[in-house]
Image 1: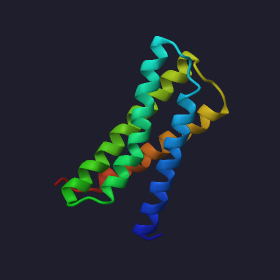
Image 2: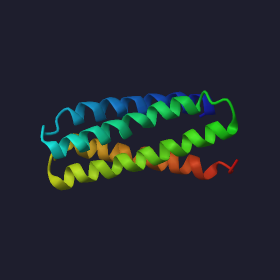
Image 3: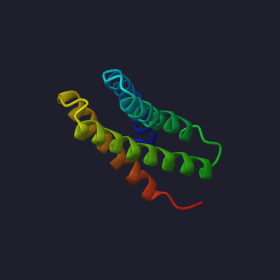
Image 4: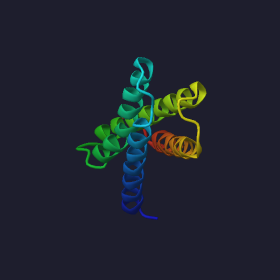
Length: 120
């Protein structure tokens, strides 16, 4: 697979993931505590794709590296919020299992990409 094709597929994958995060966060209870988690997971889960899209349009290698590392960080944060949601029991079903698996795979992808990039 060529880099351009990989980039397009990963852009689509992170966008689809953001949509899943938004739909899942809409199902969270409407308590003061869960509103904090809802805000945080929606922010981090949608930020991955937005930053990846920006990385693909970076003006420099340093900008690209910075955006990729942000993607990795946001993916890690999203995994954390998903763990809290399932541990607390806000949502426990096949949907969250699927989203959690996808979040971990996306984190692994960005961790691998980030490690292959040389510091700028």
